[in-house]
Image (tube, rainbow, N blue to C red; front, side, top):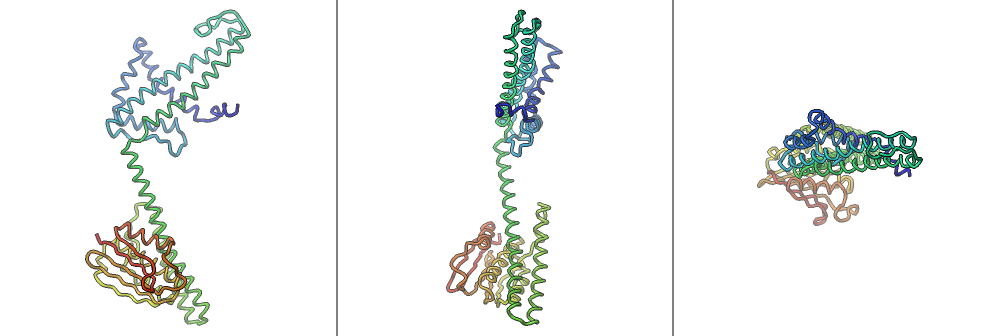
Length: 384
């Protein structure tokens, strides 16, 4: 019983009934003008539905009254973009008016029938009610009085569900709108993944350097080394805070410029940070690195940062060979370090996966894993 009466407690039931009543305002005005031609409003809706903005207005009404509060209502709120949308809008207007006529008739005659049955039970003739033409009082009429109200309740709930289903079918997004929504969703997911990689690389690198430096300073017991370690931690933390501010700026302003992100020309600070952590870094740069396009240079910086972070995290203070080369329209980046017992086979962490994803997004390729006794990260990125 409670489940049967639950729609009475939902506001959606009443907003849907209001949505069904709205077209009857136009019909009522016309009936005051000429009651002999009730079909005229339906004919007028034919050219009206072809106006692109009408679809927008109907979509707004449907979302507000048929699916209030729903996050995904599957009802479009955009003007008609094609003749198919216009024809669907015309059909929607006609169906909405037809359902409105049924709802309005039920709203008038079913309650009147209940009133007539109550009057008949008390011996009063229910004038102007064709459904209760009797005049003799009888208790049977009192028992029948709730039935029209139950029928009215069923009509209201049923028509509300029906008009909502029709709205989703006729006012739903067109194929082009679905494609645009899918592209927007894809862009949002790509942006979230990029931000996640930025945070992983910059903050992960800073924390790794800080942990390595702090552990080395505690084990060394040398005040001078401790001072250098603290200076390295301070510098790395400052750079990480700058990176964090950039990423948060992207979150606050989705259209923020990417040019503020560090590029490969600033790789010296990464190498210096690794050296201060005890790693012996040997670097070789060939080709015009300054001429590398911005997106490639920025992704190359992050790849180098993650590679050095992995070395410090998994191998510790070991010799590291970094090769950066620009030739034949390709940026080649290689980081090698001796393979230690702590590194066992190809990595499955999010850092190496992020390197491969960054390379793939730029149309490049990345190889990570053991190679001739070393751990290797080799990335090739096309400059165009």
